Length: 289
Image (cartoon, rainbow, N blue to C red):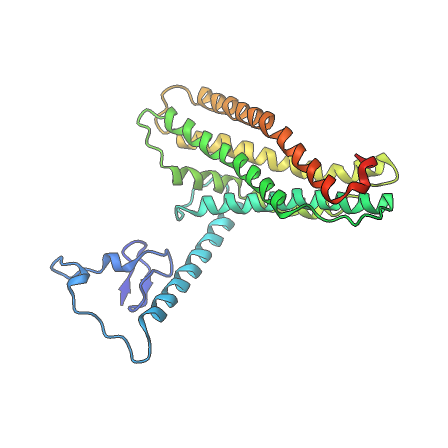
């Protein structure tokens, strides 16, 4: 019977990675007298089973274990967002990436839906297409940068606000992700709500009603991120240099300034990219813009 030295769970004797926490068991393989496992006689592989096949099996088992643990961590964060749970150090980053993908998908879906409906409303003879992959990717990068503002500024405020500076980056990201994972569910709802909007609705009142729900979901997502930002900093300040209130207020001011400067710099560039995109492929809709 073999147990993982990292999490204590029982594991198979021939596996390289723990199927519960993903720990590399080869690091802990030592003899009773303290000699490293590399000095031991090599274990004979079964006939017909090459080393690369065994390594591939271990990688699959590790991936399955990490996926299972991430899903468990995600569910726990939905049930009890403010209760810290031990997690692998990259779980928070995975949540940030998924959030960026979902939010970008919602933005692109809204733009493409507008383009299609605008073409139908104007009976354009010029076939309209969706925005290019290059523009999709740029929107994704902009969303990622916005998320990084939350993460980096929040971590910086936590590290500088502590007397000992003892804040681990991955622990902070996991804490922030644990508090904001519920926004991913709202991101999915946001995507679905986009497909209920008719941009060329006959009356402005109908359009406002359709857009209202989408804006409400978007506002809820923004509030969750703001609350998660505040709570993650608050929970990371174990030995604050000065009152937590002022650390959090300063972090909020820096975050607002970062978004303001970033918006001023990128807004015109993004507008030019969209104009160029539409002029190149949809010159027949010049009167619409």
